[in-house]
Length: 216
Ligand SMILES: CC(C)(COP(=O)(O)OP(=O)(O)OC[C@H]1O[C@@H](n2cnc3c(N)ncnc32)[C@H](O)[C@@H]1OP(=O)(O)O)[C@@H](O)C(=O)NCCC(=O)NCCS
Image (cartoon, rainbow, N blue to C red; front, top):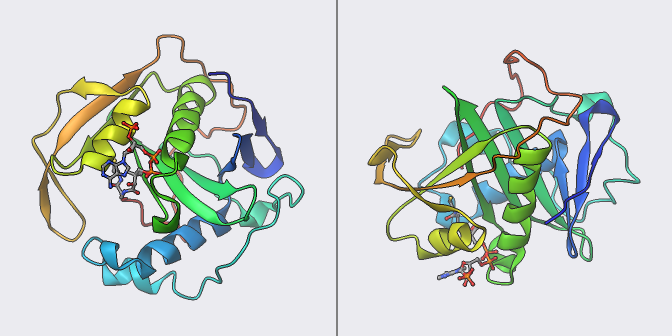
């Protein structure tokens, strides 16, 4: 798949798929996603009170065209090669339908995400993951992505497998921020043709003041 991306001023990135804008790195999208996640009863066990409290004031509702509505520097999460956040916005409804993020440490880049419940099982997950995977390899220069999922999470495994991820090895368990330990299966996506094309990544880890919470 060939994926074009606008690599804009103030670190704004926008890629278009048939039904989505895939946008990185607007702080507002991140805040909206955090609030949506906090309001989803299915996430209650996974989110700490601290994480939930910080995002409840963020207004929801349709989002303007991300290309027309060029973000100001203050609205952006500067491109950070250690943490890339992508919001999936429906081009028809202007709703935030999902998120995918890539968190890198110790030379390992882990990708994960979720779709809004109202938009699941309609192919948006694949549309988003395939695009973000391509951008991560061919724009942000990451050769290998890994993803973990619980053995019982069939949706996650099919999401990954259908987007070209294959099984690999990794830690048998993962401990969430709330202390819950999960058995984990690992998948990977490797692209030998990876290439750093983005002109904006920062080489050093930047302290996050407003956007500290990062797990899926
Ligand atoms: C996993 C998730 C992102 C998939 O999003 P989605 O928009 O429903 O994905 P798609 O519609 O593109 O479907 C992707 C695949 O998953 C399958 N799938 C989706 N929901 C499913 C479910 N509840 N049960 C079984 N399979 C499911 C689809 O049939 C499709 O399979 P295929 O590729 O073999 O045809 C979504 O279910 C989700 O947000 N889950 C909660 C968070 C999570 O588990 N994230 C994964 C952590 S890595």
